[in-house]
Image 1 (cartoon, rainbow, N blue to C red):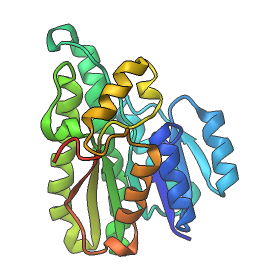
Image 2: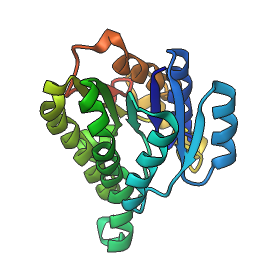
Image 3: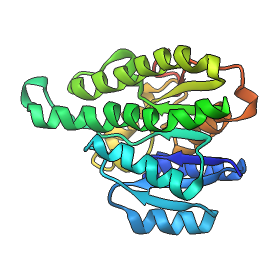
Length: 238
């Protein structure tokens, strides 16, 4: 059986990706930081299992990889979806918060990938999918740290894709636009309407929009695609 590990699997985008990959026949391994009950319930429903780790501590990534390999035996697909967002002026974000943003969004993805790559290289097969953001492509005012971290994830994708392609491993990236998840719950109705109007397709994205793109990039239909950044943003960034 093929196994897919999805980090941040209890969130809106993460849980949608879990379901999309389960429908494709993958045994889902759901990583979460705090929402273990939710992750376990979904894992039981879909025939996988849940694991817990705080990826703001980079050393936890290697331990997470070891646990998953011990229980599943292999990881065919790794989706680095766990993320942390913060809004504010660059001058208002302190170093501790900045390090946390980069630890969750970038360093944990790199460390988890590093820990799982040897078994992929041994099999000459594997797929890694990183979830960035359109702000990693163009930047956003008052989200400098988040934009910089997501841009680093894009650079990681492009470089690693070239490094591991000879071993039959594909590495791609999705850059979501404005997606209707709990991260938008703090916005009022007027702001959400404005965001939808600013999107050329005139609506906000859904977690399922991202999940369908993820299932495609992780599937056989995309077996000649690597090193690419797919913008799923309704035309907000082109």
